[in-house]
Length: 280
Length: 234
Image 1: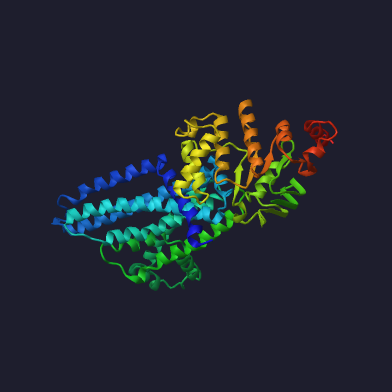
Image 2 (image 1 turned 30 degrees about the vertical axis):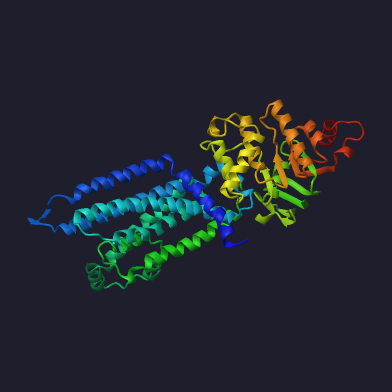
C-alpha cells in the first residue's frame, strides 16, 4: 500500500472530525467570546495614553495591546482545544463511529492520527483567524504591516498540538474533566515556575543569596532540571510573542523544542495506549 | 475465510470465551448461536480486532485478525444500534463508503444503490435522530453492505425490525449467499438461522458445544430450536 493510500483514511477521519467539532456548542460560544474580545481591543488602539504626565508613544501602545490580545487568544484557544479534545473519543464511542471506522481496513494509528490532526487543524485555524483579525486591526491602527504577528500565531499552534495529544492520552487513563484539569494544572505550574525562575535570576535575588552566609540549597540543581524539563507552554507563547515586537532570538527557542519533544513522546504513548484499548 | 484456534478471552476472573476453535469456509452462511452472554459478540469483536484475545489466534481472509488488511472486503453490522444522530442517513452512508477508500463518485453510486436496497429511499436526507429503530437498523445494514464485501459479519441484524423487515432481511441475506458471499451471522432468531445458514455452531458460557452443518444438526426431525435448547440446558 502506497503512502498516499495510507494517508487517505487519515485525511478523511481528520475531515469528519473537523466537520463534527466545528458545530459543537462550546466551540461556537468560545469563538464568539474571543471575536468580541478582538473587536473590543480595537478601542485600545485609539486615543492618547498619558503616564506620569507624559504621552505614551502610539507605536508602543499598539505593540503592547497587540501582545496582550495575542496572549488572550492563545490562552482562550488552548482552553477550547482542551474542552473539544476532552470529549473527542467519547463522542465517537457513543455514536458508534469508533467501532464503524475500526471495523474497516483502517489501523488504530490511522484513526488516532486523523482525530489528532482534525482537532488540531480546527483549533489552529480558529486561532490563526483570530490573530489575523487582531493583526489587521493593529496594521490599520499603526499604518505598518507586521508579519511577525502571523509567524507568532503559527508558532503558538505547537501548544495546541500539545494540548490535544495530552488531553487525549489522559482521557484514556482518567475521567475527561480531570484530564482537562491536569492539563490546565501543567500550564499554571509552568507559569508559576517561570515567574519563580525569573525572580531567582533577578539582581535583587542574587544579592540576597550572596549576602546570605548559608550555602546554596543542595536541591537547586534538581529543581532546575525540573524547571527545564517541565512542558514550556508559557515559554512557547512568550517566544512566539517576541516575533511581534521583533525581539526574538534563536537562543530562546528552547520552549518550542521542549513542546515538540513532549508532543512526540506523548503522541507515541497515546498510540501505544490506544492500540491496547478495548473498543466499546 | 475465518479460522479460530484455541481462542480464549478473559475479563478478570470471568472467562467470556473458553478455548474456542472453528472455521468458516468461503461462500458459507454460518450461524453462531447462543443465549445472552454466551460469548458470541466477543468472538465477533475479536475477529474485527475491536478486542484482543487472551490466548489463541484468529484469522480472517488468510491474515491474523490484528492486521487491518484482513478487514478488507468485510462488512460488519454491530449489535449496538448507535449512529451519529446529527448526520442525515445519506451522509452516514457516504462516510462509511469513503472510509472504504472509495472515490466520491463511486461512493455516491454505491450509496444510491444501497438506499434502495435497504428500503430507506426518500428518508435518506433526514437526520438519523428522526429515524425509527427499524430504519436505523436498515441504514446500518446498508452501511455494512457498502463496497460489495466478500464477507459479511452480522451481529443480531434483525433487532428492532418488524416481521416484514425480518423477512426482507432474510430474503436479502439469501440472495447475497446465492451470489457467493460468505455470511457470519449471530442471531437469537433460530427459525431465521435455520432457513438461511448452511452451518451452525452453538456456544454457551464461552464454550463451543457443537459445530456442524445445519442439515446434520436438525436431521432427527427436531427443529433448530429444540436442538439449541437441548444443548444449552445440557
